Image (cartoon, rainbow, N blue to C red; front, side, top):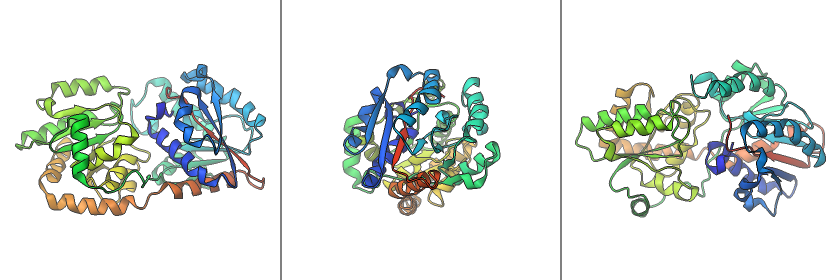
Length: 387
């Protein structure tokens, strides 16, 4: 699920592991990761036990089988007190110790055709049964918790809402001009641009409607603004690239591909506005990261996004192209609105912090361990391919 560090789940896992390092004086942590992913966790080498999982278990089916059959034996072998699997797609059916699982979203119930029929079946049917086998479920938003209650029929007392955090040492205000200069040299982006950070996934991330809205915005003005996509190709990316090629403004639309963590903050700071038209999110970190870096935000309110952005963004119906175009125009032409959103964004982003997220997650481990003396913990890292 961490996709070589390129996914939202990867950011969750890496940030949580960094946070748990602060608690190694009182607890022992064991991290299972596929061999090629271990370097991503080199920062934890001295403070945690890192266990390499053979690359032969990387494919989706083999990885699921490893979780269901091999991992329970390893849990017993390492005498672990609590097992945490950070994504619903690999939750265990066996219970070698108290189990904690994180559910980021239930998109298969909310977005038609988000995945192929096998993935949709797994997410709708198999995971429903697996979730009931967990002692505690962490939901990353109130919206996700509500979906778990509705679709999985789990009692509220087994669900704990713990919002994701922001790494404020990476994402924060800084002078804009150095960021713009660096982005211009590194990516050839000169002038003003709207930024959208998300993997290129169709239809779920809604890139095509954003392109249509951008075309409307450009047709109604003489603006030199560009539209920039940052994210790896994913399911349906070919449809997004085809729509870019058809756009009369294709010279002003740029797809950068995956952006390494070290570059993200400057990309946000250099953006004149950030737009996030996703059809559904279980949380949605990029709008908060953009806010923390001082970029004014236009955002969908689908799924948990309204909960996350509060009153600090211009909002859109992600299926209303003309409304989206109007909001692009508003933020592009109204400096007062941009300044207001920047200030509101700083305040909103400040409410989310990984230190708080980590501390609350640790309490869930302790609750799951019940009366047992909790001394060992395990992080489960999963395959970058799969459902």
